Image 1 (spheres, rainbow, N blue to C red):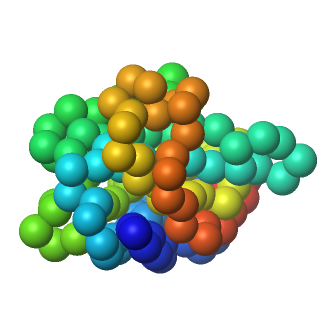
Image 2: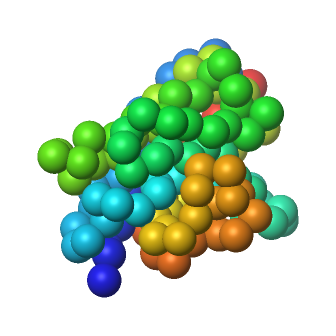
Length: 124
């Protein structure tokens, strides 16, 4: 089993920054990990993914160049640095981990394990 706990959500004005954290426990170190988000009234969507090796990444086009995903397995933690935030980034952000996906299949396949989510609100 893998447990995922997010933190770092909050409210910020457009153009600002936030850093989300996801602390993992269990046998996650060989899993692909990523972030998804769900805006009010919309379906959950992929944001970013990172390989178990901590090196390879994949981003949704809507966040490319503004968000940075990283992880350090030795610290049991993954982060999402969000810069130049826009009102359309407002959503609940979920940490995810999957044993079978790659960073390219995670967006469509989804994940085995999910955190409970943190709310990010960006005002204009």
